[in-house]
Amino acid sequence: MHESLRPRMQRTLQRPAAVSGRGYWSGHENRVVLHPAPADAGVVFVRGDIDPPMVIPVGMDFHADAINRTNLSAGGLTVQMVEHVLSALAGLGVDCCRVVVSSEELPGMDGSAQAFVEAIDAAGLVDLDLPQAPLVIEKTIRVGDDTCWIEAGPPRFPGLSIDYQLDYGPGAIGRQHLDIDVTPQNFRRELAGARTFISAADAASLKAAGLGLTVTEQDLIVFGPHGPLNNPLRWADECVRHKMLDVVGDLALAGRPLQASVRACRSGHRLNAELVARMLEQAATQRVALPV
Image 1: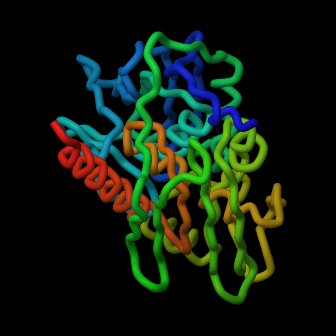
Image 2: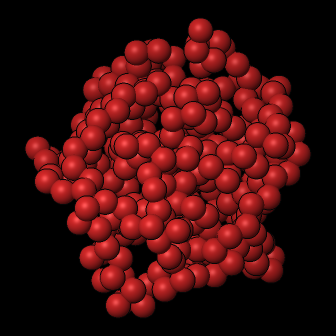
């Protein structure tokens, strides 16, 4: 039986867990400490480098547009590239957590969520005294166009499932497809270690623009014409797995666990966030329609 089939209470960490590393875009070091939080606190980021520390909640009200990453902003302050830590928390079923950071950009690590997962697992989880209040999708919602799209429909089990089609056309990355029920076990085994990828041409363009100057071919997967450069793949379809990892993290912007069957084709951070906004609109409409 899937763990998510069992009704459960909200969860948090048993004790703090720390991860340190350098941001891809800025090159700045960041110490990230995941702290336990009480029931109904949700997940929030705390800019610990600011005096007094500034809280930035996870939610669409605080989503900030960005290219190739997911950012949050409040009170004129930002946390950047939050999708991987959010994916680790959501994938492992952590409902409440204070994520205290020492710099604006979350560390890229090896391009995956593995370091966050290992830290959370080492800290352990504990049940809180209130049950979850999941967002259950009742009618299919789709955003995008005929080329790039993502949709959420009624769940096939009480949890999140993702069916993703990646299509880069002819070339080293090519076309990949995967369909997964996102349980903690599946997340650890199938998604957590899937790394960020980029083409060698795009990497060169970013560096020419002064971005990612400290990033090497060992910090993520750089694809040349014939495959990854100086960094072997963990799975033959690692790219689609990373896209699914990003979807899990981006959908965490809903601020609640999801019960939905998600299908996507060539979707990225912008469309993922747009889907969350539409899901929240649907949920609000359903609440209004309830009889008094």
